[in-house]
Length: 91
Image (cartoon, rainbow, N blue to C red; front, side):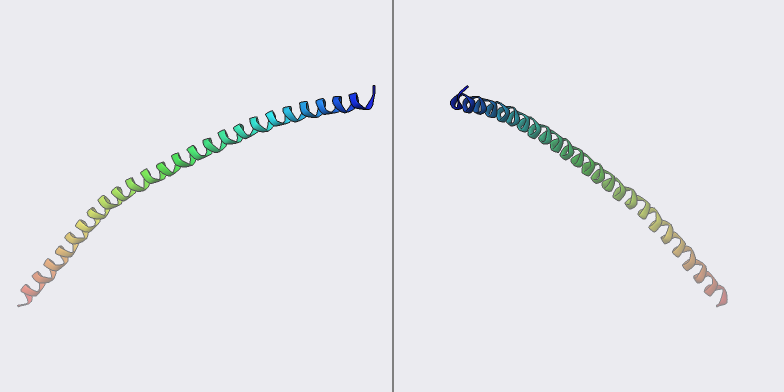
């Protein structure tokens, strides 16, 4: 085996190894891309869930707040009517 054949064999082996390495890198990049897309989808789903809960909580809080305000208005009305009835009894 002369030097020329040794360099040809070395070149063929090097190209074969690099080709396999390149295919592996490309497959790995597609795998990473799929994982990133899956993570992105999960994040979007969680954000949508949080937005839905926040919207529902606002509606729920508005309803509860309305009831609390109505109850407070009734109590204030009762207190004012009691005070006015006490004043009218004094006069």
